[in-house]
Image (cartoon, rainbow, N blue to C red; front, side):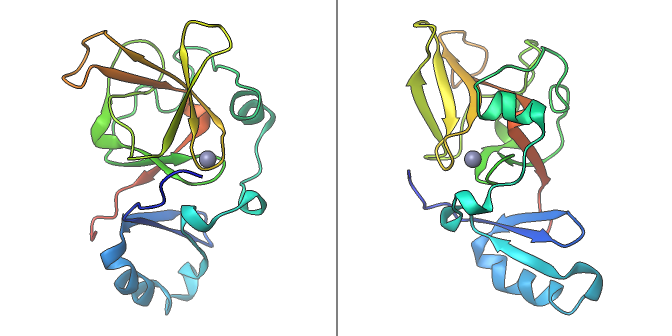
Length: 175
Ligand SMILES: [Zn+2]
């Protein structure tokens, strides 16, 4: 397991929605939601304390990408041309991976980010001997590949990620 020093929390509510925000607002958000019968907190998901028993179940398509290192067809992903403000978390384990502020349109057909959350992504040489694979540092799920030297943004980094590996969480406006 890599760094666990994220100052981010995610609340997973019974209605299937999520809140993401900074930990200094966590107590207030808990107090706000606890009394609401329609928004009972089913679990407070700190990614750093999650284990394999907390993995979200995957569809066959998600398993092909996340577990077996597959790639979704370009332009097919739900987040390819999606630019709302929030956080992208691991679809399998909910670890925060990329801030939407780091997302840019690379025109490649996959969601692209020029910066990861600190310590959120593991880089390993790809089996193809050419590229660098990126995986979720929390659950080791396949995300995509990372490229440099393209000068597409000032950070000169492109995390090319499968939408199927991600789940978007709207930013908590109160955070
Ligand atoms: Zn993960």
